[in-house]
Image (cartoon, rainbow, N blue to C red; front, side):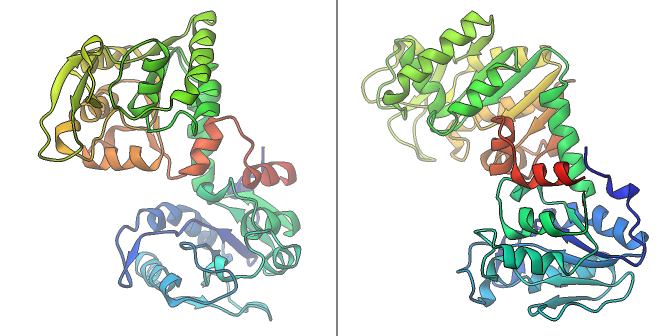
Length: 389
């Protein structure tokens, strides 16, 4: 395990902290500062330890090597200054190094403006490493990207460690995936089996019950010989679905699919939803949510679970006529006594929409990194710190 930040001597040291300040900004105003607030404990710990603090992050997808005011971290510097109660200077040019006093903070301009960031340029990595005595990796959301500001700098910095947010994320993932209390229940929703095959296969080895929703469930329903009308599915991946079903049976694992569904002929707020048994789905039907029987089954399964992993909705929850299934799912997870871990963009949107954030034990902000981790992949931004620490 890497050296913990708490155990590092940071007194008067130059401490470069890679955070994830990739926040939504509209007309120069931050729409959600959740990621900034999540980074505060790590920054405050560095200040308490009398460090000279240099913050590093990306924002959006600007063209590499070109400054673009639309992607500037200026609003982030301003918000950080307000939250921490001290001035924070935004720095664009650091080729000559950075001169700052203990307990002082600077924020480097968007790392994606730097030539060589994306391809993990050795020159840029060494330049960033030269700014610090200690590099702190605190941005789980970009740990799956081998870039100069995540992996390269960690390779050349004199000392490395994880930040408090990263430690918290890894502890939560470990609790749910490496040392879970049984029975373990995972929910995987979304539109495409093709993008989550590795995820399904890895989870099947770790869970007792695998709940499928959305287009993924439709493909599995098709694999089991059900007619699904015009519902979103991937017929080309039926063979893979059959392999996973066979593997589950061989391992005595339960793959849950809905017994009844909500169908319509269109996705719209004014659509007319109809509840049907799976066997009743017909020609022009679109399966857009799970039905009331399925909702009760899910609530029962989740009440029995000791560990719950949630990634993806079970219906088109953004559309009012088809939101109830995901709402019932969210409420069942929130009401469960199980340890619950949730992640992924649609999942977080559902959590916010149904206001259950205070009753989910850990909500990962990792997005792609969260998915890759639960697929069982080694994330380079974590691996380098573990190796060097």
